[in-house]
Length: 110
Image (tube, rainbow, N blue to C red):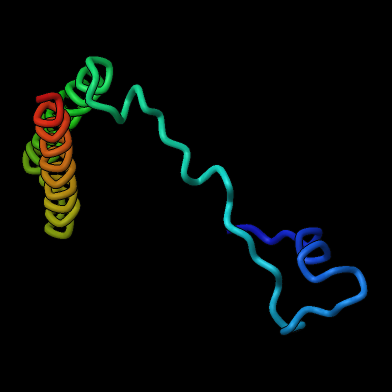
């Protein structure tokens, strides 16, 4: 969302005042809904992109487990357990969503 004072002048006209002068005129960003059909589609490029994202998410699991193991071996304080656990959960959710997206693209090719 962005504030656009010139759009307010054109929306309400130069001689009219806005219905609620205390509130700014807010317009949605027109570029927010841009989609790349080649990447989001079920073509070979889209499936290949999803496979790359699944691999990156799986490699993030390796990084998370390395972070946890290095924290344990270094004798990190107990509150650092939450950082490792949170990173692991976020990576697992990301991997799950990417696998679902990949399966959806593969299924839509039929």
